[in-house]
Amino acid sequence: MTDFRADVFQNEYLPDGGDVVDAVVTVTASGGDGTVAAAAAGQERVEVIVIDCSGSMNEDGGAKIRAARQATMTAIDTLSDGTLFAVVAGVDGAYALYPQQAGSVERASAQTKAQAKEVVSQVRAKGGTAIGTWLLAAGGIFNSVPNSINHCILLTDGKNQSESDRALNTAISQCVGLFQCDARGLGTDWNIDELRRISTALLGTVDIIPSPDQMEAEFRALTEAAMGKEVGDVALRLWTPQGSNLEFVKQVAPNIDDLTPKGVPVKALTNDYPLGAWSGDESRDYHVRIRIPVGSVGEERLGARVMLVIDGVEQPSALVRAIWTDDEVLSTRINREVAHYTGQAELADVIADGLAARQAGDGDTATMKLGRAVQLAHEAGNGDTVKLLEKVVDVEDPATGTVRLKRQVEDADAMALDVRSTRTVRVNKQ
Image 1 (cartoon, helix red, strand yellow):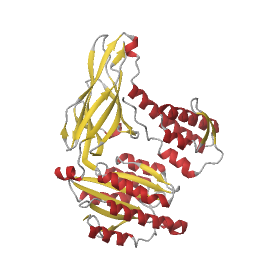
Image 2 (cartoon, one colour; image 1 turned 90 degrees about the vertical axis):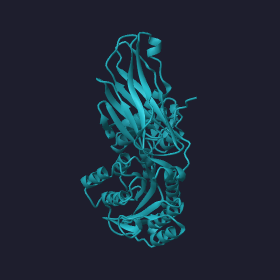
Image 3 (spheres, helix red, strand yellow; image 1 turned 135 degrees about the horizontal axis):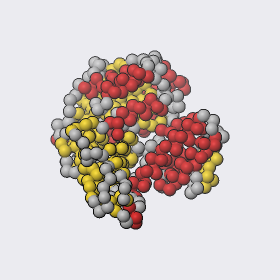
């Protein structure tokens, strides 16, 4: 059985007149047992693979569509026996590849996997790109299986050119809460904003697959991760006192995701923030900021009550506290967790600003912003982000953020920095 725990890290002391409370909530799942746990909870696991079969997948001599076929077959092989699954082809509409009846699923076995791979091996690329219809097709499949842990892999190599942006947004909104979606863009001709909107709304991830030969490993890793999910519905429930204002709730590790607009009122002063599906051995961090009515020196108040809701069942709470003091040493003490993730959020922001300035031809702003990004990544020990930045700028001194813009940058390198800018490193709690 998977056990969940919430721990709060904060400096509870506020200066005289202070009204802002910051806390990092670490949610940890442990003790799970994979498929056994999901079965014991009466939950099916459903996997849908949506692959772009538009005409552009024939480019590079057909390398893209060949790689997509192989990656999909590898994902099918990676499915745990008993998993319900389906494969959908995306063009300027969506059609079922396996099983061939739209909206249906098959249970993974040696026989059904072989059947599915045979169908996938025959897929050809033609037509346009209408990602909203792909999402709705996946949603129809997930709707056919109640009380399930739902995951979708979505691959595209192009922009959403065969439907309006409004249609895509409508489709995304109709899929919220129904399934999690990991969206992947192949090559450099797809739109980061489109896939980021999908993954953010559907509690998944977005990333670039720079070349076709990297697709198989990515699909295998995504499917393995999905097969490890044991609990399908986890939420962070926050109670805040009368007169307070919850400024934001953000996931800050393993990546940054603003959950504030996803809050669902439960009752007066209480909101739920969906955290999606979890494996039995996982930990994530969340930054909560609350503005509360000012108290007098020596007064202590509850700033928030933090609860977890696991498949609809509320678990015991952790507390966010506020104590007013005139002791400057106490009130100015920096909490490591809050400081660390505040810096990580700034890192994501300055990368976005720097890349936008570079794209607009504003070299001075791009240099300043990306230099600050190098400095922040270096301070946080975020080596992966430093490596990504080094493909866009020449680093002279990481400690001071002294950099020079590279004259020539590969499109894939700039896109990788953009799409991975929200990945964070965990704070060392020892």
